[in-house]
Amino acid sequence: MMEMKPQAFSAVVAAPLVAGAEQTLAAAHYRLLDVPGSAVTRVAKNHLDAEDMGWEGGEESATLYHYCYDENTPRIFYVYPPVIAGTELRITAAVYPDEVTTDESEIPLPETYLPTIVDYLLFRAYGKHSKAQGNERRSTEAFTRFAGGMGVKATNLGQTSPNTTEVGS
Image 1 (cartoon, rainbow, N blue to C red):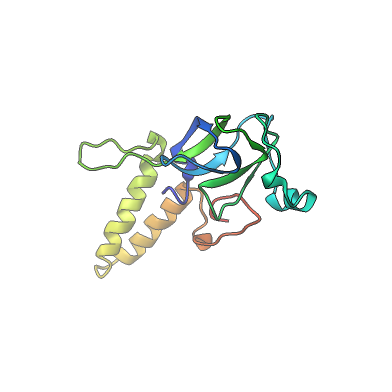
Image 2: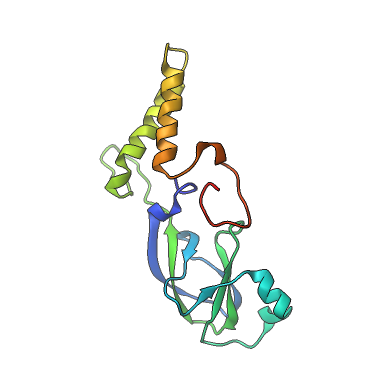
């Protein structure tokens, strides 16, 4: 579910930055989702590279103007100008959920996802017993409902594009 709907596991956190332009999310964070507010804006890294090929090695500052993010490296992002160590940036990040280890464990998702989780479980259960009459169809129907509940078009699963930030597009 984290791959299809990372927003379901999101948190706004203060991220301490290391010196320089390249930043890595904390171990508890799965991927960068946003930098909220209007003070620091997202720009394409190739635009900064075209403007100044050496910007990553430029003078460090405590004031940020832009950030760059590539979906292919979800835990790494860049800031412009390069920052002084200890500078903090408020980010929205997808966090790794707590592991469900027992029947009593709480599912680490908002309750609104309960029907979607049930559809996923039905998809898996019917799929394991697909030889029984009607179960293959039931499995497909449950998966279609699951994908719809996640906001994903089933035909687009697994496709990625460097030109979009939409999940499943």
